[in-house]
Length: 240
Image 1 (cartoon, rainbow, N blue to C red):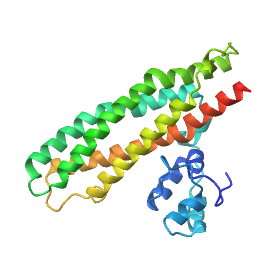
Image 2 (cartoon, helix red, strand yellow):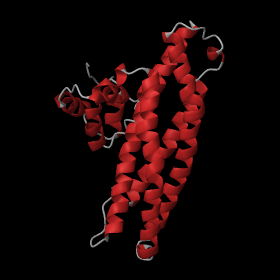
Image 3 (tube, rainbow, N blue to C red):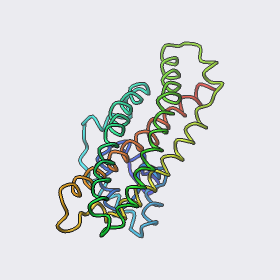
Image 4 (tube, rainbow, N blue to C red):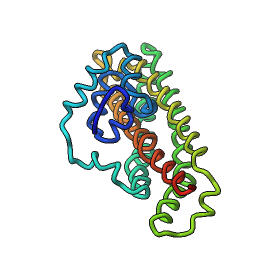
């Protein structure tokens, strides 16, 4: 892939997920704000674009599974996101809440920020759960039907009467809100830095929160920059 200042951040990461680490090191949001060019993103953090481009070009070209997301069918992408990200979120939320409750009860008096962190995560947990159900019950099945119908050359007239763009715009809005919430959590935890002498529960809570945020970034990236983009392009092409 040829990378220059006009290349979109999300497209770079979509082409090779290993480049996500470069953007993360510079504090550039590649998932919710992946539609910005490298030039625009660089200006926002007062860094010379060529510095970032140079580092991106140094990233080793990989033939790993991550490099092949763009080649996957929309059906496979939907199933992958559900199996690897939605189920992870559902499985991990109760565990994180357990540890946040524990450290709030034990350390909350000295560390008042813990209560705000817990409330932010509880809000995120509730919103994400509803968001994922909308995808699982409505959006993903619709995308899969359009994709499979196109491949099997079935009549898709009825499917095209209901545009997916409005639903996808709603999903983008939800993603932006989750991104903001976790930016607040990262700031309140000093990037998940455990206080000196913290107990194991404190360490586990922060470690789980950090892992959750990293998974969420990849989750949102796969949807915003690959699945949703490809679905809209497919639908628009079929309407022509």
